Amino acid sequence: MRQEELEQERGIAVERRTMYVSVQRRTIAQTRKPKAIQVDANEEEIQQLQGLMD
Image 1 (cartoon, helix red, strand yellow):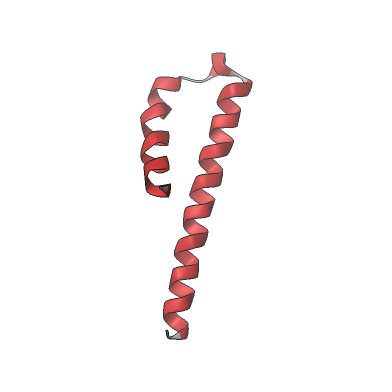
Image 2: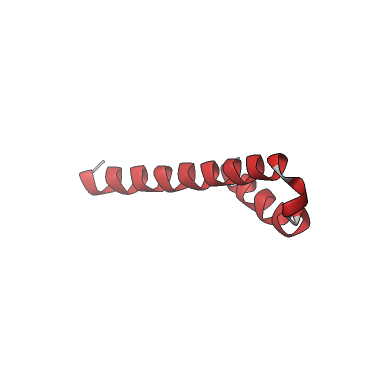
């Protein structure tokens, strides 16, 4: 594998991890203050992002 390919793959992995972490943070935020958040709007988005992680 060339250096470029390795860097690209590492970049993708970091992006995915960042996305996953932001989803987790959002989920934590929802559990902390459920009244302030419209869960329905985010539910689908979260499921889509979690689908990418599998």
